[in-house]
Length: 82
Image (cartoon, rainbow, N blue to C red; front, side):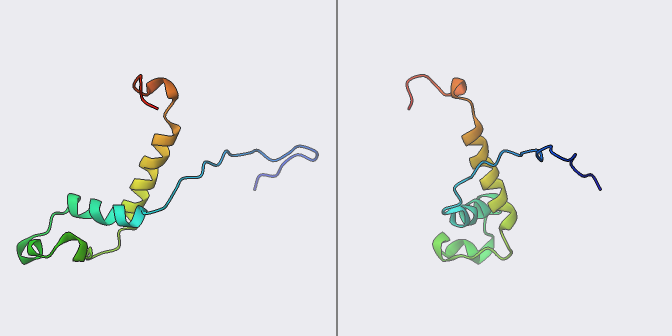
């Protein structure tokens, strides 16, 4: 197990907060885009459908996409947009 030298501060890791609001609802919509309903399930309105499995993996993808949007340098944004 590695230990720090005496008197030397531990290494720091930058932490970037990512807004998690509505990520579960967005993941539910993304689930149905990735796996369109089949058969009679198509007749049920999307807002009333529940995915048949946990969608934590899709939530994780959405949070990574949000992080990458935050980390995008200013120079890559189109001119004229705020």
